[in-house]
Amino acid sequence: MKKLGLAAIAILFAAATFAQTTTTPVTTTPTPRTPAEKAQMKDLRQDIRTLDKDKAEAKTEINKGDFADAKTDITNAQTVRTDIKADATTLKSEGIATPVKTADKQVKAIDEKAVKTTITDIHADKVSEQADVKAGNIKAAQAEQADIKADRKALKADIKQARRDGIKHPVRRAK
Image 1 (tube, one colour):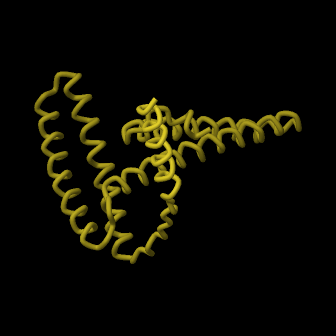
Image 2 (spheres, one colour):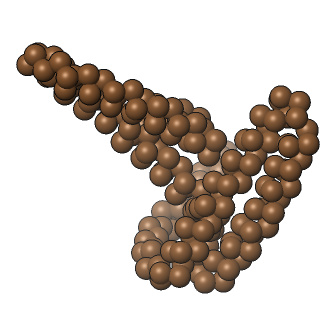
C-alpha cells in the first residue's frame, strides 16, 4: 500500500512538472539577402547542377564500359565539389546557416516548377487544338500539334534534369 501511494505521488509530481513547462514557438524571420549573397547562391546552384550532371554522366559511361571518360567526369566532379565547399564556407561566414542544403532545395524547386509549367503548356495546347478542330481550322490544329510535340520534348528534358538532380517522381510531384 505504501509503494502504491508513493507511486501515485511521483506521478502527480511528474504531471505537475510537465504542466509547468511551456513551449513558445520559435518564429524566425529570414534575413534579407544582399545581391552578393544572391549571386553566390546562384553560383552554388549552378555548381550543384554541374556536380549532378558530372556524376550522372560518369555513371552512364561506367555502365557503357568507357572507363577513361568516366574517370575524367569523376575528376571534374571532384573539382566542382571543392568549388561547392569554398562557396559554402563563404556563405556560412556571411550568415547563411546551411547553404548547400538550401541551394539543393532551390534546385529541386526550380526543377519541379519547370516540369509543372511544361505540363500546363501541354494541357493548354491540347485544349486549343480541340477547339481548333471543332471550329474547322485545320492549319491551326496542326500548329498546335507541333507545339505539343515540342512541349513533350521539353518535358522529357525537364524530367531528365529533375531526376538527375534527385527528384524521384517529377511528374507526380508536379501535379
